[in-house]
Image 1 (tube, rainbow, N blue to C red):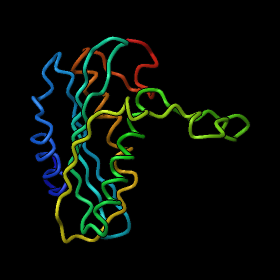
Image 2 (image 1 turned 120 degrees about the horizontal axis):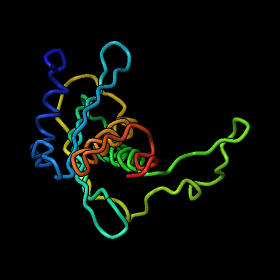
Image 3 (image 1 turned 135 degrees about the vertical axis):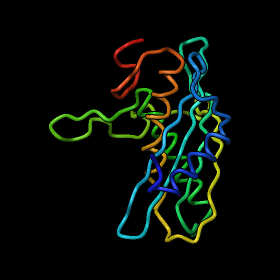
Length: 174
């Protein structure tokens, strides 16, 4: 199915190896997702992510996100890594319940603390691999946000057998 997207297919292959994905066996709590974004005619970003869940006190927790990213030629490695990791955490927060409320078309939350973003203690381990490429560079800022929720949703399905289709994922109960 990814024959016309070899860079995405390669990111997906590498991510499943990096995250030691077992094929989402029932009860495993593992899920995978892949996203391709295009900017202009030549630049494209590709990301694949494996999410690992664990059941514990207080419910289900994301314990690890493993991602492989192909953003073409990397202009600044540290900034690219920070943007992808930050995007993964923000995507995690959207999947698990953090959101912006609006009243009269304006956000109710006036400060970042009001968004209920994950703290360092809540953050899962992030394992990240960036693909070396000579392709035109792509801005990595939104890739992690787009891939984390579907990977987590697929991990929830593998863990529970229930398919969640709305954010936040557990908003309809378990």
